[in-house]
Amino acid sequence: MKAMMKDSSDKMASMQMTGKPDIDFAMMMRIHHQGAVEMAKTELKDGNEPQMKKMAKGIISAQKREIADFDKFLAKHGHPMEKMSK
Image 1 (cartoon, rainbow, N blue to C red):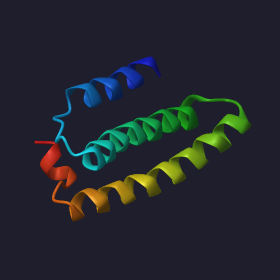
Image 2: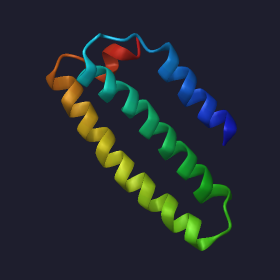
Image 3: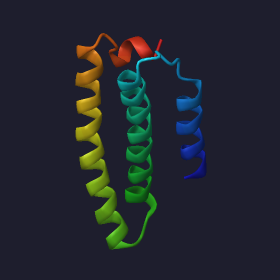
């Protein structure tokens, strides 16, 4: 889990800022949410507690919806994810 958090933090820290608060927020939050999805997937794979597995499923569902919203916003404003990953 710590390695996943560090990976997300490193991605956000190395992200090229645009100087546009809405765009920068959406890009950084997308990275943050993707990290939450990855951590939740690990919980589903390796966790034992039903309560935590249930929460992980909810996190995956909610975060994926929000990631899609961020992607739509970014594409609409000329910052599609494909462009950012290059």
